Length: 134
Length: 134
Image (cartoon, rainbow over all chains, first blue to last red):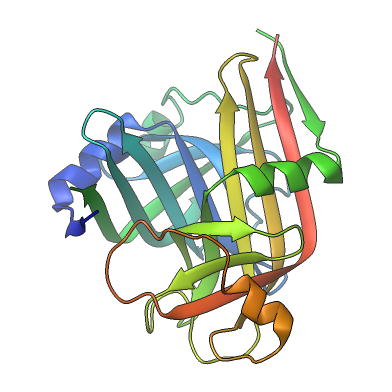
């Protein structure tokens, strides 16, 4: 069985980010790496998700995070993943029009409870790859 | 639509770790959080995966990592996730019998190429939850 790995073009990474709903946020909490699944939206520029208090964010205005999505295309039998590295900002109370628009994005957090915190992740590096098994 | 979140019992976390093949490793590289998907095996105690040189590991003998799996049970319409926090060790050249046995675990890395490095993750904290939509 031969496998070939291909780097994804930026356009394809963005398309996958736009049509996926569940991703995983990687961050450092108390000096330790942590990963949590989040339902998110991608407006073409930033990743937006909602979080409960003290959960996936803190009051630190700017912090480094990673964000990952992956999946399998059943028809083609290929696996793919997209990894974003960037900065997370809380936009719950920001008053600029862009933030206000982002707080209108349709995001359905899977988990119940208070999800009043809006967080955006501004990508700095986006990479993706696809693994094709021939 | 009502959703209820339930913490998973340890036994269920371990069962999910044992029957899943694809997880995501969270770690810090050059001071920045990173997430990469990995194919892995779980022998009941530790998570084992294979990595290429300089990829998901370094020569640091002990480092903190996170590891996450998630999925959806189609029949029950519930989402679940398990998150492990622990330490990663390279066991490529360790000569104890346990390491040797772990290097026999059946792991098929999705990506092609040199995957000669064997890494184990020793869990310190394992948590899991299931989200039920009623």
